[in-house]
Image 1: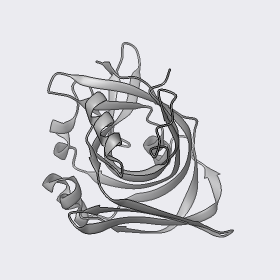
Image 2: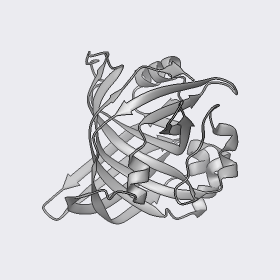
Image 3: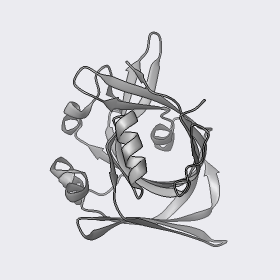
Image 4: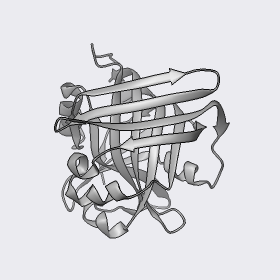
Length: 235
């Protein structure tokens, strides 16, 4: 049985090209940074959990909620093939039980903060907004996209960002947890405009404050799908 089943919906992704040296001490053992066309990416991601079930059971008041995370991309060579995955710098959610379970079971880096979201859609466009309150100040990630979906092209940057099916967690310098995330290939909505009002240093630590001065190289809005998160193993 899958550890978690849910839907991930309306994934807003802002992608930044950064110096890989900034991430080196965060890379889990037995993984290495996964680059796209020689570039190292970090992504700010906001999305909605829908119909969430833990070990097949819906937890009252924890079935629908937002998450915003900062992540980067790694790969692990497992015998005869590469597994492509993500590492989370921090995952922000509005429910303390989520933080307790994720940090205890998966040794992740969840934080509970006040959050809110807006999905405003009409026949012409989709406006998706995720907000979270850090140290008394609201942070904001907004995308306005076309209403009609489109395919994510093979070999594209969007495919690289969305087609990572493993999660890796650095437990200590020698120990890494691995878990699989399953979902079908996603569609996207072409982003027409975006607004990011985030103090990256305040939210994610001083090492990431430099992102305040960067513009994302791309911003995406993916529809998402049903997903599963499988149990963890040590590599």
